[in-house]
Image (cartoon, rainbow, N blue to C red; front, top):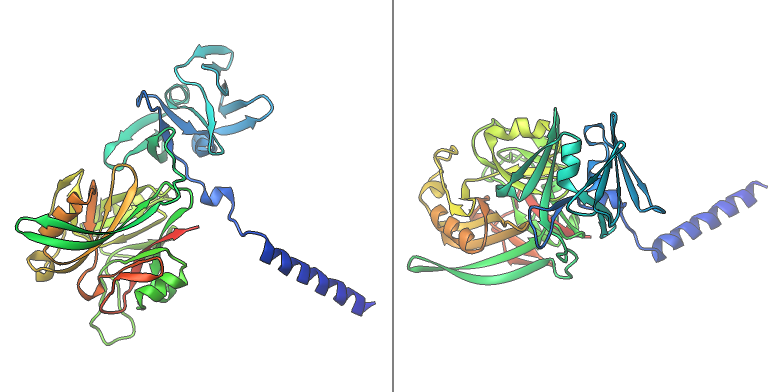
Length: 387
């Protein structure tokens, strides 16, 4: 009898293994989907928010009735009802005409932002520097990227690699540049640690392959010259929503992103308060800042840098930039000073930009090979996965 049981278990295990081979592996919709506010193509003041993003926010409960194509939103004694395609909103027993009708797109239900925020007494702030919308009520905060309704976010080519030359003054700088569409549903941004721990070093290509990354660029500064096994990175590092490396709280710039791939550059002095809000999924501190709101803006000494390599020198450089339409620019070049690098990033289309570790650490990896080969092993990296 026991041998028969073992035989059945063996057959079951073989069958499960077979299924794992023939069935595609996929993550849950909750882990891969990105929430964003959609702006009407003809009227940018008409905005729509996905109901799944507000479910649970500020004690809001959302229920979708597929058969009736109806959305119920309840918060306390306020009950909102909307029907797909109808420009009306029922608030408890009263019916109100609204400008835009709810709709379904890419598997999500979208409802007009303004009448809902007014009914639920939310404070709404439009943030041009990050192309995002903030909803606030009491201590509750929700921040979502915004983009145009009808844009094809499933473009088959969300990662573009280019070799370009930018002219700054009398000099020309050849660069390697990778541009990533962060709102694409298959794009995931992450911070990677050498050896999966703080203080280790590793080849950038090996790190990228181990994390199954499509793109990787070296991250923040670290103690590359010590003979000790522990090579300390400098500044804050966040991965998976966890603070992996603490810092002193100086003013050096920090690159951050949340689960919707909404990116932002913030000052180190603001980090603790922002991290305590619980929305930062990943980030690392480097600097100095290069571009602010589309204009070159550098304060090297104000951010606390004293190294001549940053203050006046030229050399191999790595940088990242953020565009107004939620693209991430990862770029490497050689021989540039920090002011020249800032001009390069502006010409590359960055609305916000910052410097990363440079010199022998500077490296850019794409699609299985180096575009720029680092001269040493690195401590950490920003990586892009295409799932």
